[in-house]
Length: 132
Image 1 (tube, rainbow, N blue to C red):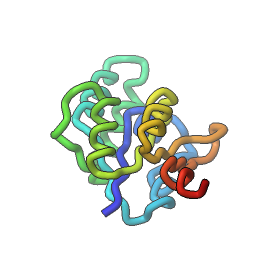
Image 2 (image 1 turned 90 degrees about the vertical axis):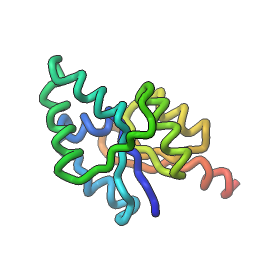
Image 3 (image 1 turned 180 degrees about the vertical axis):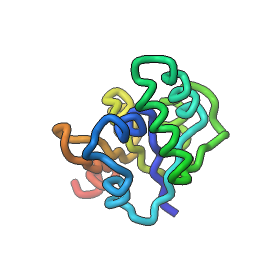
């Protein structure tokens, strides 16, 4: 089973970027199971009283409405939990967080991110190293 781990920035972008939706993500791996962490849910909940409350609320609704699994195994800092879960599952991570993206790629974890603010792309460091 292929997994795609969703981070806070990706989930928030689903509400903030009108052109982005989960079907765009599923084009990479149509049968992949979508998953996030409890720490991401907590992070989204912490935004509910701030300027980004609408996006956070929509992100939480997306998790529930689309049956996105929430891993209870990790309850530390969201980025660390995403890294650990992705490594454990051999998963891809969907993120728009540049720092997390670089960290994941350095560790050999494939990343789906937004290129030029318009298009989702998959960067798989393992595939790239095999082609060299």
